[in-house]
Length: 439
Ligand code: 5AD
Ligand code: SF4
Image (cartoon, rainbow, N blue to C red; front, side, top):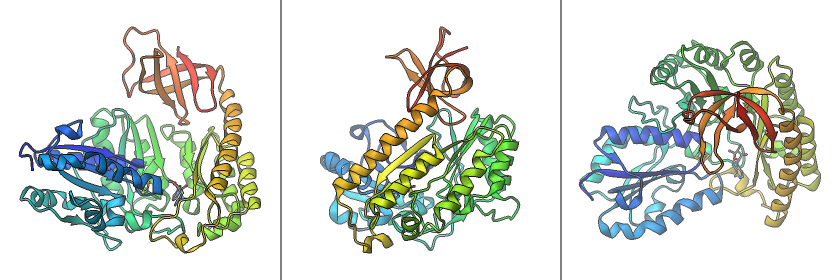
């Protein structure tokens, strides 16, 4: 292996993975490694992987295939994250040039795994499964996002939805103490961040090991850390979504006007097959709580179409739900059969073309809903946090508290920096973004 201790890391998947990578990078740097920006320049090539759908999983094997020739030049490969945990040692068979395979529940052992790699071992695994009850906390997080500080509050998932790999790839649910979460929030604000995103596969089942704070109380406490201007949280499971979360958003101005509440289907029959443990009516009651808030809280969701056994009528119920809720944003997915999951034993009866057709109908309808929704912001002045720039269009890009993308022009000679705030008057709207000018 190259002795200069350089590494390249590419991240796939969700924000949990993005943040895990920040912790992995910090850990490697602490071990004397230096991050580089291309596979060619690195001694160690790492992929932090996602296995939520088959397409996501294929990406890592394509990437490994593209770069395996670098093995002969002395470079070493490591597969981290959800595909690593799911496939385990099978990865060595499929890609024999890989030396390290580690799931997220084993990252605390990274320093030890790295020294074994340096000593020339070529079959190193970190594959803690659902037995692990340790959370991966580290003081060495190397924050890569210039405007948003991620904080993990709960890892793993105990929900076992019939379609989902996460309970198998990320292990059992384990929460951090609210004391340690708040300490991290203070460190982040000291470092200059004003936006925090609390992360967990299911933040609503947060359970403080010290018993000091409920999830809503933790939200309030983070929102009151001096220097904080925006607090976000993902992701919520409707089953554990309590009314006090809405109350606390109403009460604490720094909590963003946005709740992501994945519904997955508008048919109670399908929800039952998915083992979601709620009905459509029960979900709609939570939606009513959000809509009854004093603040205009935006709502987004995830929907799976083509789950085994989903009939045309079930799908119509999902479409009815869209019409009823009028979401601000919808992430739609075609059902993808995943290893280990209960749904794998159900007959995946919906042809791929039908899944694609349903998804298109869903996305078209939602586009129409959003066109009207976004148009309602025309003429408003809103606070936007700057995320970056689009030099080709001469626009600054950012997001509203409601999590809507806003592209705006600014008369200032120097474009505002990521993480700064601007008051923006909305002058134009699209189904997925707002356009405006700084005032
Ligand atoms: N197939 C399709 N979509 C899935 N999701 C999770 N598992 C699957 C699967 N097997 C979707 C869900 C979840 C989002 C992160 O990904 O909608 O909320
Ligand atoms: Fe992908 Fe789920 Fe793992 Fe995130 S937790 S990386 S979405 S499989």
